[in-house]
Image (cartoon, helix red, strand yellow):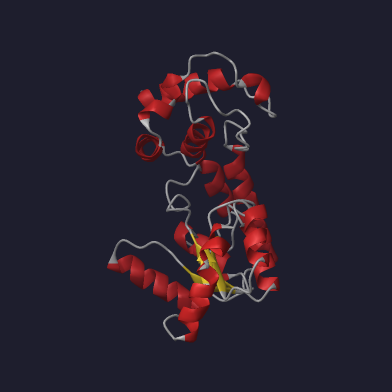
Length: 252
């Protein structure tokens, strides 16, 4: 609504008409219903969405990808490595799945190949921090083809995803029904970072994210154990107890 009110589309169309830009599109970081609303509101040239073998049902997900393709919208895939979290460290349960593969591939290759295997993905964005990584990504983009992964391999991706999800300690859907918290704890955000720390077996990295992205006033240690959130949670999570565990986890 804000974009329509401010005339952003008209501005972009004029810029395209004048040759200042070639395509009109958007980058997306929200839920599928919001994605669908945006997609159906205009004849976009492209969209940029998160795509990796773990987050198939997160944000726009594969459902959003297919919707974009059905409307002839070009797709740019971001986060194919999940910010590097699908690269290292790899949990033993997931490694056990990949050991059943017929192909000897690095975790980076597996993640990138899953995205390139999507027939209608035009561009893949992979974060790179060295020239060696640039060369590796360019090499993979030359050899990876759509629809090349056999069914047996695709099943392993599904199993690997399930192993990651089975590691999630708190089954929070981030519905936010528990908010507002009387003590101002950012419950869903706190749960989210803690879940990823356990899921990816990477406490130090996620402790850094916890301290960087959640203000001190909104962290787990501020919970007063009042219990106001408990009857609000549709998943019947004992939130105060979990927050106490999380506080101990990130404080140790």
